[in-house]
Image (cartoon, rainbow, N blue to C red; front, side, top):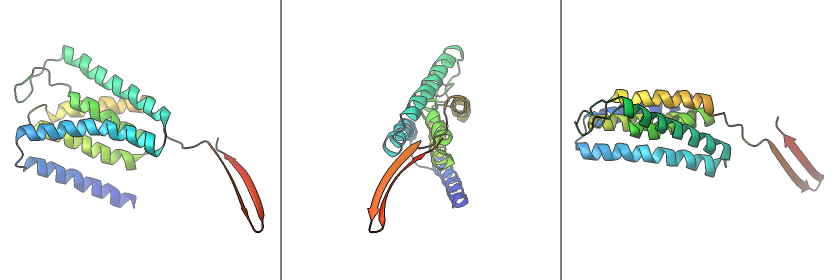
Length: 184
């Protein structure tokens, strides 16, 4: 099951790359789609944490990693002047779109496992590829921020262990049961 999922994600990444390379989309549309993915990934990560797991600790960790990654990107932009491929700005490195999406994919991987993180990573790198094709940044700009976010996630984000305790009660024709389970 896990191997099939991995190969499906790999095929999706290759397909996304080929589609972006051979697409008839104009540069503005590619940039808009890339930015949309970059905004949707943090929203998805918070939604997964809250609705699926009610994981307040994870949301705090995601906020910290995102703030540090975006802050690092802003700081680096002040000192590194690199013209974007389309010539619109001299501050294309590091990519701010990647600074927004990369912490989310790294967080999902580190907190909940590769089953959550791999699809998010594919989408994040797909957004980087679209922005590269649109001339908004170079693919290396996005990969550099992804590396920074991965290091920050590894240091800040903890693995999710689920509920620490549970209890239950039931009754049938043979008797009743009341129990409590504590996971240490």
